[in-house]
Image (tube, rainbow, N blue to C red; front, side, top):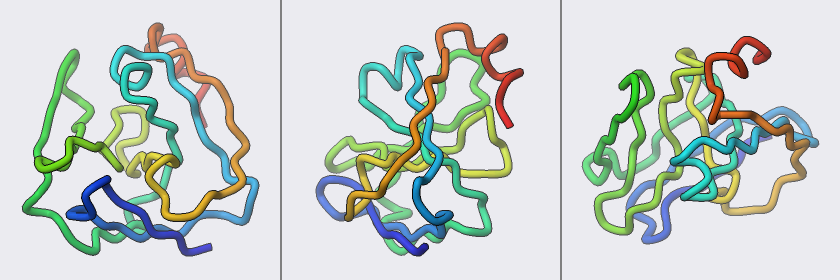
Length: 121
């Protein structure tokens, strides 16, 4: 299923291929996900296309520095980023999709990342 989405101001736009609903998603309680309300849908790199806004993205790293958090420099929204948990995929924010998608949400204990990551597929 092809979906599109992006940041609040529209500078960053993307398209992604998702499985048929319900689409697996993760609700993480780490410091940044909790503060921003990010709801993760994991999309392999080959099933994601940045349509516009590469020049509008700015990067932020913290902790181990393995994850690259990409924000729109105009509106501050992180619509997708490179997670350390899935180096072969993007994490797309389900809240930034243009249309509502039926999700199957699982909880991820990002506050205890090392232990929780061992249970990821």
